[in-house]
Amino acid sequence: MKKRSGFVSNSSSSSFTCPICDETGDTEYDDIVSCNGCDSIFCYTCKDANNLVEHCPVCKLETVSDYDMITYLLKSRSLDRKLIVEEMRAHGNLTNLRKWLRSKE
Image (cartoon, rainbow, N blue to C red; front, side):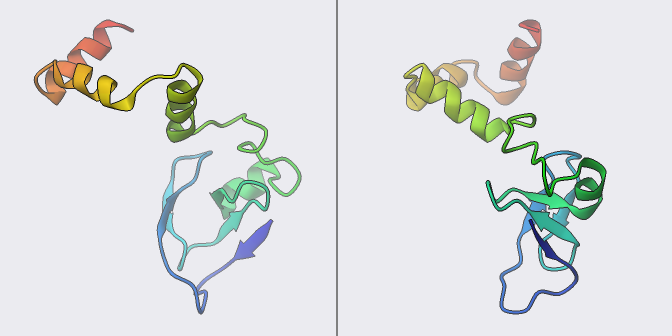
């Protein structure tokens, strides 16, 4: 694990969302820890709480991002993203799409 604290010189700042607690932060100003295995960025609080030095929940697939899940579903089922977007647009607008999604829960 790499630990960064406070201002990091010669680095570009970007925001991040901790995959464990969903807190957002800024890589330039917040205390963060990044996993050497998957390069996920965690807030330092979650690093302490979950012992990320030895057990990264992202590497172990205990925590799966929406991006990874969607990418997996698209590729493992040979789905065409463009066709899916067309199906979603057939609902007319986001409100109707979300209403339809809620009805499938």
